[in-house]
Image (tube, rainbow, N blue to C red; front, top):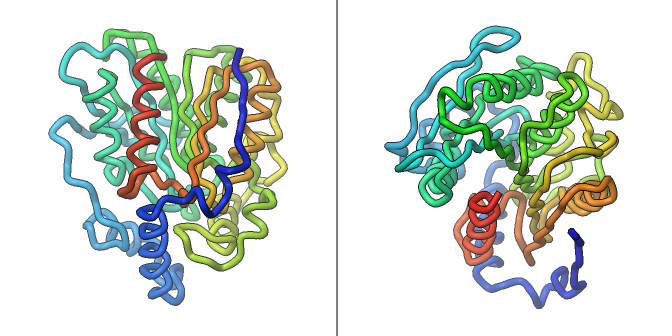
Length: 318
């Protein structure tokens, strides 16, 4: 039986490790030095990040990785595939974060390379269409297409039909939306595990997101609103369960590992979704890390090491 038990002490300042405080302070200093992060055109921000010139460093390129395209509803969808050393014991469909506006598979290279190496999984990371140039429903359409491609091609391409799905931030949102689309539109549940890190599951904004304020600890209230407006620019509605999966029926979802830090503006999204997941009769585990910023697993530190080890263990056992 799954259960979610939290000790209130995890939310206390005393529980925050010194190196976590140092990482958070460094992020705040770096982002505070940029008066208006969104004054620069988005294509320039994306290009700068991919060139390793963004605020956060670009991981080294993995020798395991190769780029391909798969068929999508609006044309080819790029994917980046990482292969394990031996035969793949399963496939992890990864959906990157970035507020549906930024991000790429390449920017998650170290984490995805590690999953392939340590867990013995093939990893397929989806470079879905980004907003505001291609707003909702382009991103979930691409992710749905990638999932259906994996169901069709998994046995021939990777020698397995054992599938997990997951992502970080907006990628966690899209992961849940993909699971719901497969269940409701295609009457299938091919994924047996989900890794959901710091997702935004209610785009109307949960209390932690709404009340966070201006502190630029990776993500603040202004950033979240900016991303939501980009994503829903044309036809999306925040009260649509396809957009805000916390509002959906969650029956028949796979077992999931939810990960979040206590210093994340999207903390409530994970607290609410993990409990809703469990209440719907699904297996759910939730790890809350003291002082962790938004998607803290992308930074150095003891809690990042702990969380990545836990995620790898979850994927190794699914």
